[in-house]
Length: 396
Ligand code: SF4
Ligand code: SF4
Image 1 (cartoon, protein in one colour):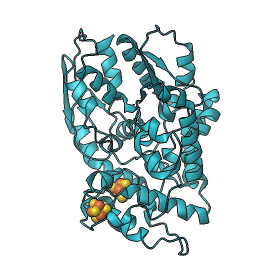
Image 2 (tube, rainbow, N blue to C red):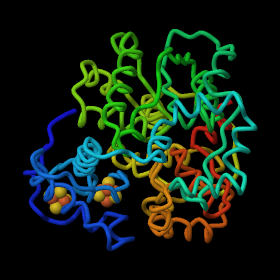
Image 3 (cartoon, protein in one colour):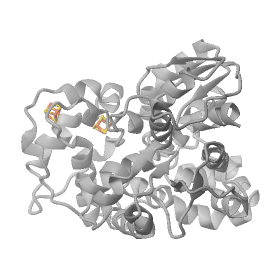
Image 4 (tube, protein in one colour):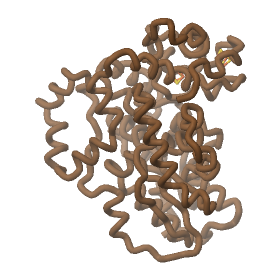
C-alpha cells in the first residue's frame, strides 16, 4: 500500500470539497473531507493512535471531483480507515459486505434458498443484530451467474476483440447487463472475451478497511488481463466503480506492476461506445425506440472526468426522451447504505434524487451503477435499467 501522507500538502484549505460532500450535508457527526482527509492526515503518523474520523466517509468521491488542487481526498480517507483497522478488529458485517465475490460463490449454488435465507423477516432481524440495516434489503442472487451464462453463449467470431470485466454486481446479481453488453458488441462486429481469473475489482474491500485483500484482488486482475492489455485490447466494464478502480483507484493506493498499463486500456462501457460512435464505428441503422426516461449519473462515473457518455448516447437514439436527474449521490455508495449505523445518512443523502424520481413520472430510471439502481428501486419503487440494456434494443 502506498504512503500515508499521500499528497495532503497540496490542500490549500479552500473547502470546496466540504461544500459538495453529501455526507457532511446529511450529518453533523462527520467533520467533512477537508478536515478528515488532508488536515487530519498530517497528524496520522504511525506513532499516533489511528482514529475512525473517516469511517463516515462513503468513498463517493464527490470531494475529489471538486478539489482544484487534485488532492485524492477520498483515498486519504480510505488509507486512514485501513490504518485504523491495522490496529482494531473488523466487524463481521463489514467483512461480509466487502467480500462479495466469496459470498456470491457461496450463495448462488443455493438460490432460491440463499435468497430466502437473507430476505425473510426473521433473518433480516438477525442481520440487524449483526449491524446490517434491517430496512435495506440486500440484492437477490441469481442462480446462473453472468460467467456461467457467458460460457454457454455462442458468439460470432470477429477480428475485433474487447475484454469485458463483469465485476461482482453483474456476475451475481444482474447478469442481464453483461449479456446486453455482449449483444451490443456482437451487433457492432466485436467479439467479447472474459478471461479466466478475473474477480472483484477491490473497491468494497478498500471502502471497508481491507487493503490487503484489495491489493491481492488488484494483482489477480492485472495478471488475468495482462495478455490482453499487452495485445492492446480494450478492457470494458459496465459497473462504474469497477471502471474507476481499474483506471484510477488501484494506482492511487497500490504499487502493482502492470496496473498503469492496464489503466490506459480501461473504458466504461458507455464511454467506449460513444468513442466508437464518434469514430463512425457503430451501426447507424438503429431501431426506433419509445419511452420517457430519467437518467442518474453515478458518482463514480462523474469522478472519471468523461462526462455523461451514457446520457449522451441514449439522447441520440431515435424515439427516446431522456432527462438528467442531476440530483447528486444516491446515498448507497456500494456497501455503505446497507449498514445499520449508516442507513439514515444514506437515505438523507439520496433524498433529493428520490424526490426527482417520484416527481418525474418516467417509465424507468437509467443509471450505470448497479447499487445506485438498487437504492433507487428500493427507495422509490421505480423500474431501473443500465443504459446498455436500452441500447441493445436499438442495436439488435
Ligand atoms: S468521498 Fe464522499 S463522503 Fe467521503 S469525504 Fe468525499 S465527498 Fe464526503
Ligand atoms: S477542495 Fe482540495 S484544496 Fe480545497 S480544502 Fe478540499 S482538499 Fe483542500
